[in-house]
Image (cartoon, rainbow, N blue to C red; front, side):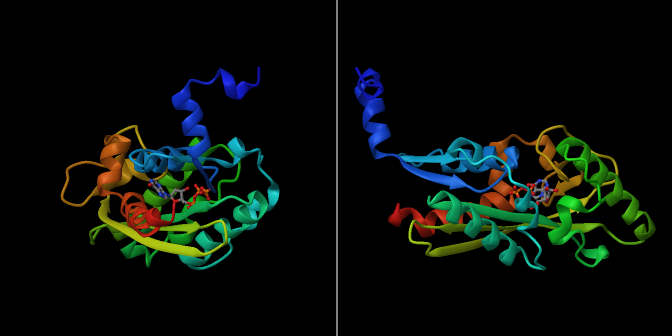
Length: 224
Ligand code: ITT
């Protein structure tokens, strides 16, 4: 008997009807946040590159050479769309700090130049470098925002792009242990909390990624 026949009728129905969408990210936290945003939409399966058989390739490190989030997001989406042939989502995001003239911006991932490939140590090195960089700006508020550009390429490579931002302030002493990246140092505007003190669901309510992907879902849901 084929595998298909072992599935319960509901599972068989689901498999037949599910639209498989690739989320072009190697960042497991981003993937978790975006999956939780798409949870309410039935018939969609959000898969990461490993789940569709695309193991990491060195050339992926050169997909984001641009000065804008828009260009980097569309570059990532186009590459993964081309090699997978699947409808593809991508996100380029980062932290923009006012008194640092917008840094780290599109270089948020590699702000500290840490390059050992271990995401937790890289986040720690980035956070340490961020606080060090801000030390000579004690006379001003450390206002900042996270920015996210979310992209969708459909099976014919038609592109939709949306932007989300959230305002906040950088704090010197980290708070919380959830989230990733700069989250323990990012105090969300109009709350007393950093993103590292919020669950994925709460973070999505306020976050740059939550805002960008909610807009994107509105734009693409009729096509799915
Ligand atoms: P992919 O390119 O594989 O999606 P990435 O982590 O490299 O994963 P980006 O190029 O978009 O993603 O870089 C985003 C960096 O900005 C990320 O590594 C963090 O340092 C920071 N960042 C973006 N969104 C964040 C968030 O929600 N919380 C904390 N840090 C964030």
